[in-house]
Image (cartoon, rainbow, N blue to C red; front, top):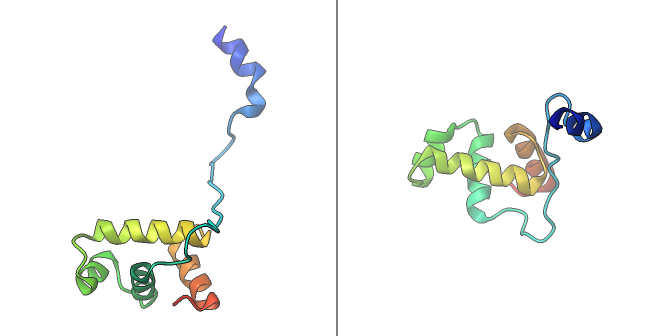
Length: 92
C-alpha cells in the first residue's frame, strides 16, 4: 500500500538538494538599524564573535540569527550576496 502511494505521487517528491527560494518580503522594512550594523561589520570582514563584541550583543548566535533574517529580507542565499546587494542598494 505505501509503495503504491509513493509511486503514484513520485512527481511530488523532491529530487536532489532542495533550496528554498528566498524572496524579499515587501511588507517588512528593508533592514532594521541593528541589521544594518551587523551586515556592515560583516562586510568589513568581522566574524560573528567580533561583531557580537563590537555591538554589545550577548552571543555570536544572535549575530547569526540577524544574518539569517537579513538574507531573508534581501532575498539572498548567503551573507556575501547580502552584503553586495545591500551596498548596491545603499542600505549599508
